[in-house]
Length: 428
Image (cartoon, rainbow, N blue to C red; front, side):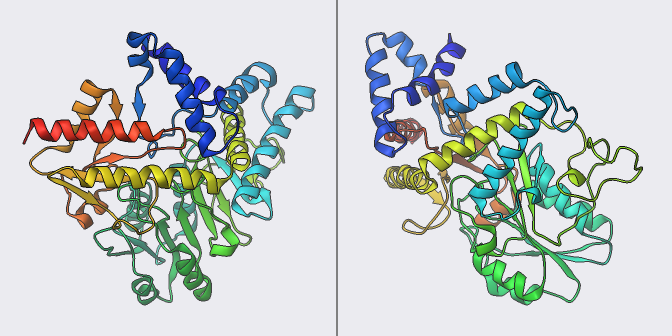
């Protein structure tokens, strides 16, 4: 029953709308409520509240589910491996997905976009492929382990790494980065938006510094892609890594890495590409150089559908909706005695993430109580970013992280605030 009810959630939420705007989504939500209010037992299960979109967005647009199903049932073949109709259909689908990503991120040549299984794979490809012993890289202490661990591995192989401090909201000062640049600096890498505090780094300013120094600039867009407008050329981003399953609204197991012209890391993996089969060496042309093995066509089909939904809806509309939910969340939580909010102060720009702690209470207990007693899903702990928690003073217990998405309603936020208030009251 629980699985059935959860699967109905995205269908009703979207099918009940009259258009892609904020009002239509809320309208669809209200219509869904009215349909099920006659059956409170079912309605209670149906109203599972998901607020962990920073980990994986859920639900997806209905078009994403349909695209994955269509690719599995009606395409089936591998791209670039056969000249028959379905093989060509698979190749065309992958090309169209690449083009959709290029349009969304201001990429002039879609062949410079490489499909990966995740942002983690994309970051590993960039870091491991570009850095050599004796090189120097600059990052911050507030990075996800998908940046920090590849850099630590590079360090063990003779690369020098400078980790810059951030303030208590998780922000870097560009002046500190400028002072850290050396003659042997070969890479600047940082996250666009913190997965703990929601702090948004000034990547345009940093990109300008990197361009002036002639240093490749790698941006981890795990928390911003699909939610915050990004134009790689305008911002001076030479490498962009992003997952497909978060703000881009695609399935798990998808992601990409954009490489600007002239950026040529060593491949992370080599093998069959469907081209140059007589050559023992890996092909040089893009994107085949970095796409060995059979691509995840159903996942890429879903990612394409997610990107198309974003373009049709408007990324500004999505950003506005999520910002409103975050503002309501910050305002409501701030009224609860004992709550500390972590991240940029109210009124400063932030991503769709709010982290909080409650005096005298383990974040893990709060998360457990929200799940058990209220059927509300949030993330607790260190969120794979221990350096950020050291910077904001929440190490080692971590925080409770709430991350609403485009398909959440204001009512979800109100219920979360009320539940946290009750938990705080019971343990006062």
